Length: 128
Image (tube, one colour):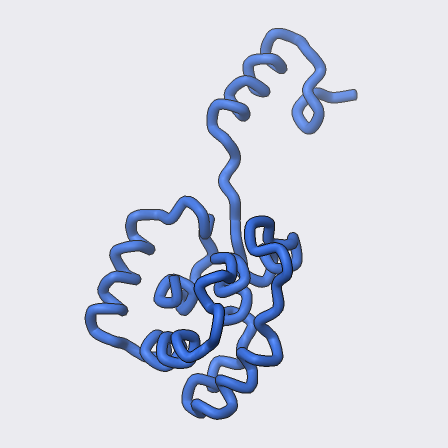
């Protein structure tokens, strides 16, 4: 998760594209920066495994890009900014900061398109 959060592109953080997953595995294997520094700092954070994926992504993606060069500053940033009370249900704010881009459910979208084609009123598709 840490390696994926260091990548610059936006994607659905709960349904990872294969290309993102493969690149993250490569980052971990090669111990590339800033993954290496973030990983060490987060492993030293008590209770880190209780936080949601969105909270971790938001934390990493909201940080100044140079923080990882300074371990003390990075740990201070983590301590000050890693806040989440409901780990099972991340806030919209956390999802936005994580740059989570959910994909529409393909079946639901197909059903909406079919309903509109049948002449039914569908919010966001049909003209009022």
